Length: 84
Image 1 (cartoon, rainbow, N blue to C red):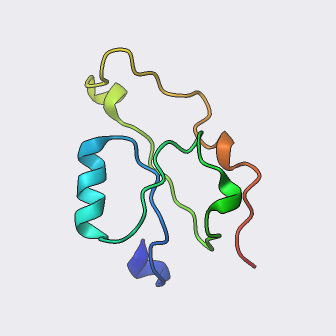
Image 2 (spheres, rainbow, N blue to C red):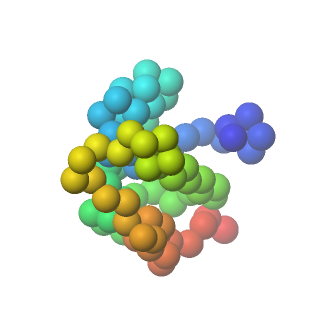
Image 3 (cartoon, rainbow, N blue to C red):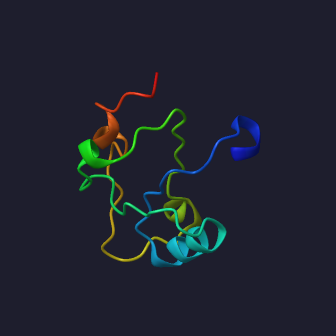
């Protein structure tokens, strides 16, 4: 994605510890906001391009016990507007 649009990665929002370690290794110094439903979006830098990847654990049969996927994972970003 970065090679297509240019620019830099401003932040990640990842809750899985293993995925977070991979992101930190590839983009050191980029903050991980964690759970997007608990972020105060007024304090987060605006971005021009926003991408999302949805968990595939259910499809692969590897979802951790007791962990549910929210029905609308991007609802927390609904009021977010891109840079202009």
